[in-house]
Image (tube, rainbow, N blue to C red):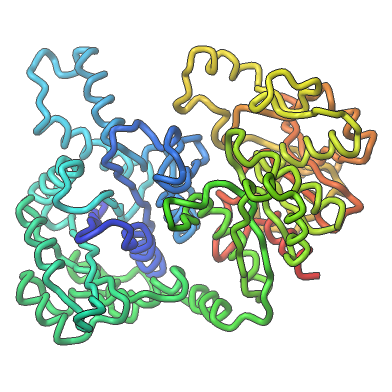
Length: 551
């Protein structure tokens, strides 16, 4: 029988519920338990696919093709296991399922009500994850902050589950303790109000994860314990740290894993083994030399602030590969809009060890990205193009090497004389119907790697799943999120000038990887390798990119 841990947030958003949930999973997994995680987002959107990355952060894609919240990526990275569509729900998804069931007479004519029918659908989905994953622990992160109207129904579902299975359900509240500059003292009152708000939903937290700039001291623990009706040892200090991958170790120092098992009256399957995490954190804190990586994009600014969450998986994948090679990743945000206005400023790229053009959509900044790709190609600077970044590299090569003037993607220029990148045939129907939600080429697809290519060499000696083919090539699988592809009508023209199509989807003959063999590292992928990178198992293409950058 699975055990359920609900993780909610108090005081404010952005304090690390996803990392906390992932870290709880890691320390339970280190004790021999099978763990999975669910993310509940309170917005009406059916999924995250139509959201602006500047407002919501990165859109993560699972193996089975759901466009979801970036916290699913955190779960996969910390647990080193795939998380699937059923592990993700939104208010929109839940209501859609209930309404569809009502239309199909699934409620047998009875009046369908917000309570209890919406919470019951939430509970049904949670239990389905437990059954299909066969997990010992199911962690459920409730998005938003307690007290918000949007997540009340999810808290109600959690309360109902606790009522029915009191010994199998536990609540953790991630809250924040500020230290106002004008006061100079850590304040607990906001967290007290957060707990009382949670109490008003019929829920008493079993554990409080106290986020703060510095470690919470004993007087504050005692104060929270008394005011919030919780044992002092169940107030877990969660201070700001250099790397999120140290969080499991900090939780272990606070005996969080032991406290959780005690509350469920369980014993560890095996002695807690976090040595791999300890080695990783040691490397993070003691790197040998830096590696400077520039990321050229447009999803950076939100008002006066920078939002790196738009490229979260890319950032983490770079870090994983750099740490694996004992390097300190130094990542800079390079605005492609600036290169459009001041083309000569691309000369700054020579100060970087490597350059990445990540995925994206739309016309803004595209010419700046093309200029960046050209500079890297001409000056032998390691270049890694991801999805749109691959298309950018192909366009630049067509224009400046194949002399196909005006070459472009029809996403930007429908009248281009050379459609190097064109919309996929099956996507034309979706665009015409304006059917944009969850209709892209999404999820895992196979890719055949050409023997002798840089891509082949990167995967061949890795731990990533692969299948050897009779012709000497290997078959891999990677995740996608796109509507446009390299136009096969131009493949020969590009290949004749030296661009190698080193990865091909065998089912539809689609180009998945391009590279320049004589360049230090100039490679683009139509898929998103960043989604499959793990801190303890970096992605082979990112490893190859960083290796080229440091040599």
